[in-house]
Image (tube, rainbow, N blue to C red; front, side):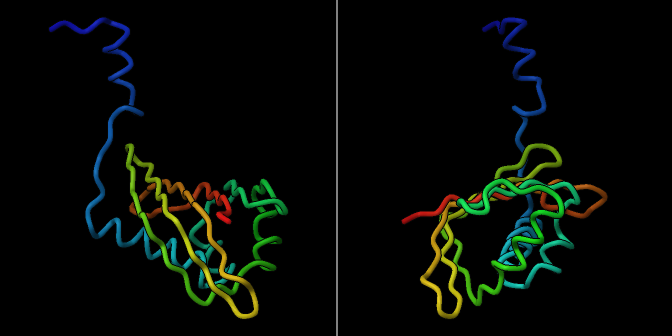
Length: 137
């Protein structure tokens, strides 16, 4: 079987090379993701890149950099989260977590959403570079 030059180039691209995270690395990322929901903005900011992008149901919408923390200070305080349908995809130094969340806080209806967070691994440290939520009603 022969492969065309165009196909060979496409397959050689880094985006087509997947890898696996060890169970330990996956545990670290899932712990970071849960703390993102439950540990407040200071903890979330410490594990997020400076110029990260986050997309939340309107309002607030698309946020980047310092805009994120202004909004999240008003929207934190989840006392518990359950993440179901967890998936991890890795491509080089990038890991994407996808999941269905049910989050609970006092005096607010349970929040349900489909979520994706993208992390960049650098110098044995993972930083969130994006997060997206789609509310499920």
